[in-house]
Image (cartoon, rainbow, N blue to C red; front, side):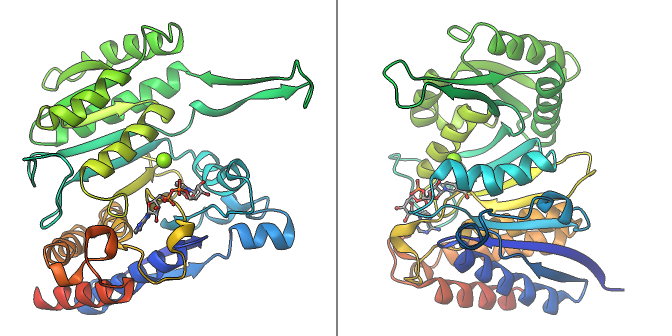
Length: 358
Ligand code: NAI
Ligand code: MG
């Protein structure tokens, strides 16, 4: 019997629709081929155009409208004429926080054929999963501004760390580290300078660690972590960090693995009380929008994570094997990877690679 999964597609802005369309073509190809599952996709026109038209990026009850779906495939949000904090909070963060997708999971590895800017580092030398706390911390949305435009104007941006929030992300990260062959976790912190929230973060890490005696763990200050990622990538495996720190570290990770166009993300509600959301980590990339050259690999990889989340492990593995066949082929690569292929050509190659696996 064919399994049916309901998907909400939110392509968003800029290259978002270009890469989401590419991923939907790949998913459709895969489902026709295997016949094991079918995706029922509903498309939402939420994003900056809707904001210009109606004053809001999504309806007020947008997060609630997503509840009936099994998963969400998201593109990107952001437009040159709308402030970034309006687009981010009006759509992506409204969904992540509205659906309590508290675990943001960002795998990074060097795919076949892709070269890292780090000398002598190839596939296998850099294989990380960054876990980002996705519900509170520096992006909790606490703060304010007064005396606007006056010389004594003030703005506050308060980071929030709760025992519940930190415990659940630590437990998630230790569990993920345990599931990987090296069973190794690095807890990123800045508890020398941030002496309340991040001291709590460290204390809870140590408490939760006692539940995972088989996981080797260590602690790194976030600034030193950038050095270790660059100079000793092999020493890292699973990484957990706060909302802001992991946001920054995962862009670095994507660059070290070859291109921001490759990296995927899952925004998970691990208890599955609400649908989880899958998206490339890149933004709407105004500079290449409409040129047809956006690299769809980050969205293909995100789609593979979505399939895995839906229990379609075999299809997810097939899709990843096809992604690797495509990145290994110089003729299939988009300009960010040093090639000349378009998004459409790369997608065609991917479908051909899926066929070749039969
Ligand atoms: P960006 O990720 O959109 O672009 C950074 C650079 O990487 C650009 O040169 C772009 O051409 C390149 N790039 C990104 N994705 C690519 C792909 N798939 N293929 C080839 N090249 C790619 O980040 P930027 O420029 O800082 O932000 C642009 C807009 O996107 C802003 O409005 C920002 O707020 C928004 N943004 C949204 C995100 C999201 O929706 N999750 C994440 C990051 C930024
Ligand atoms: Mg980011």
